[in-house]
Length: 380
Image (cartoon, rainbow, N blue to C red; front, side, top):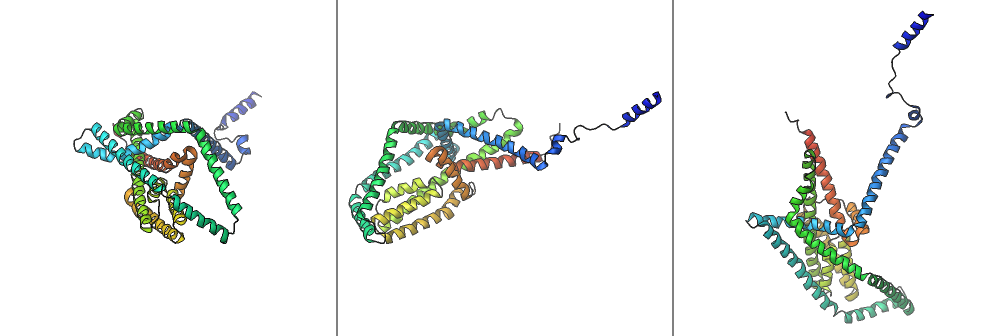
C-alpha cells in the first residue's frame, strides 16, 4: 500500500506545472476577442473625451485671459524678425523691442483712424442715393416678376426693423460689461505682446527647465515650429488683407461704386478669416453695387472680386506664407467654426493658426523623437 502511495506522489510530481499567465480564464473564453478590444478602445476614447470636455470647460472659465494670450503670442512672434534685424545692427534689444512695438502701433492705428474718418464722410452722403435706389427696388418688387403688394413690403420692413431693434436692445443691456471686457482684453493684449516680444525666449526656457533633458530638445523643436507657423500666419494674413483691400478699393473706384473706403475696411477685416471672409467681402461689395448703382455694375464687381480672390489664393498667399502653413480648406472651415463657437470672432480668428501650430508642433515633436531614437548609444 505504501508503495502505491509513493508511486502516486512521484507521478504527481512529474506533471508539468500550469502557467497561470497563459492559461485562459473562463471570463476570457466567454468574451470574443473583438469585443474585448472594442471595450479597451471605448474606455480609452471615453477618457480622452472627458479630458477634452474638461479642457473646454476650463477654457470657457478663463477665456478672457486665454484669447489675449494666444493673440499676443502670434503678434510677438511676427515682430521677432525686425527686432532681430535691429539687434544685429548693434541696437540694444530693449530699445529694438520698443521701436518695433511703437512703429507697429502707429502703422495699425494711423491708417485705421484715417479709414474710419473717410468711411464716416462717405456714409454721410449716401442718403440721397439710398432713397432713390430704395424707390427703384420697391417699384421692381411690386411691378416685377415677384409681384408683392405695398402692404407686404411694409410688413417685411417692420419685421426686419423689429429684429434689428431687438438685437440693439440686447446689446445695450450688456453694453457696459461688453465694453469693459473688450477694453481689458485689448490692454492685456498690448501688455502681453510687448512682454512676449521682449522676454519670450527667457519665459520659454524657464517653462521647460524642469523637463527631462532627453525630451527637452524635442519639446523645443515643437515649440519653435508652432511659433514659426503662428508668426508666418500673422504676417501673411495682414499682408494679404492689405493687398485685397487695395485691389478691391481700386476696382470699386474705377467702376464708380460708392462707399469705397468702408468696403476696403470690410475687406481687410474679412481677410482675417480665411475662405469665409473673402466670400463675405465679395458679396458685400456686390450688394452695395447692386443697390446703389445697378445690376450691370454689380456683375463687374462680382467678377473683379473673384479675380482678387484667385490672385490671393494662388499668388499672394503662397509667396507670403510659403509652405509653413499648409492645411486643407476643410480643416480651415472646421477650425473657424470651432473657434467661433468657443470664443466668438476672436476664436474664429485664432482657430486656423492654433490648429496649424498644433499640427506643426506634433509633427516636429515626432520627428525629433524619431531622430533621437535613431542615434547610437553614447559610450561611457
